[in-house]
Amino acid sequence: MTPTGVLVAVGASDFEAGLLDSLRGHELHVVRRCVDIVDLIATASSRQAQVALVSVALRGLDAELVGRLADEEVAVVGVTASATSADEAVLRSLGVDLVVAADASAEVVEAVREASARRAGGSGSPDPCATGQQDISPWDVDVAGTPASAQDGRPFASDANIRYGSTAPGAVWSGRLPPGHQPASARGQQAAPRRGRVIAVWGPSGAPGRSVVALGLGSELASLGNQTMVVDCDVYGGSTAQLLGLLDESSGLLAATRTANMGKLTARALAGHARAVTPTLRVLTGIPRADRWTEVRPPLLRQVVMASRGLAELTVLDCGFSLELDEEISYDTTAPRRNGATVTALEQADVVVVVGAADPVGLGRLVRALSDLTMVVPQCLPHVVVNRMRGTLGWSSHEIRATLEHSVRTGAVTFLPQDQTACDRALVHGKVLSEVAPKSKLTQGLAALAAEIAGVRRPANQRAGVSGRTAGTDP
Image (tube, rainbow, N blue to C red; front, side, top):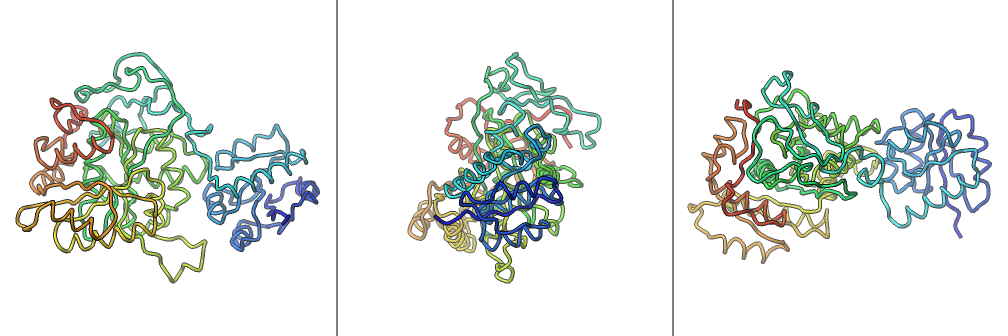
């Protein structure tokens, strides 16, 4: 049997010599004692080792490093000085699932073997929804009050009243609730170890309306009574904050990734970085400038998505357009990739919604984009949304559907009409479409799309998209 290659990177820990003694024999081979994280990453990228042993004494150890080792297919085992060491909690918060004490030789060997077996079996990073990283009951989160600190009149999610499994009836929202909606506590839901679903909204270049569809979809999903989070992870031109008239001086996404890098991102922490728009809708605003894309690293975005699964029943990811690989840096596995955030979002999604424009140029881009998508997420069967349908184009939805089915493999196809007046009104007032144009055919189309994705039927007497934004928040 081929020995398991092990990297040892425990910094200036006093137990390093004893740790090396524990690894001798047992079909384990110490590939290298790494002096720092640069040495560790470089050796890991050579694919000579299957497991890395790390400790908190390693300078620069953070969640991003753990994620990069996972990307190199190197399993990570945390090592503490003793079984009673407080370092275990720190290591687990960084995403290290297996932690052992250096003074327990047999347990060290067993942990390395288990990590190697997990790696061979393809198990990934631990999910905060299934481990101690989730510190709130899933989806039992209600946002209350409008703090005086909210300069634009809307509540900050950092002022959230997060209810820990309470079953006491009654809403804690200072404004009105959507018709037929009850908070999780009023519905009598108990904490359940399940994960929310993730919906990625993506599309080709040319501004086909990705952000409008993503925000509209999130709003309509929330109006159905689902705790919903919209995450703007477009690293080229995020616009969710502007669409809602929110100040973009501080990015919720960047704050969340920084917290994730420190190993402190929980569902509660994520709620503090998001902005509350309605009782059931939160928004994590994107990067304020495109040149800050390097701060949205794939390992950190994965943690944000996993934390959002624990916070919200449904998470909508507003993705950037590009999937192409930068060939000039592709040889450098540690170099940041601008499109890594979009690829990660698509890989993490349970449902992918692809938005394309209905005009000839937009349809051509849509067909090529769907082909590119199969290269990134081969098993994906996307829900296609043909946006901005209008009679002046000269073709029907049946003709467009036939063209798409002939050219590419798709799932369901939805058509949304163009309503520039409603979109302009929503943009000028910083509101969602359902607030300014509830009877618009575009709003109704988004409501139908949300109901289809959520797997429910919207009551005929329920007005599409009533959002229930708190009183006094009109711009």
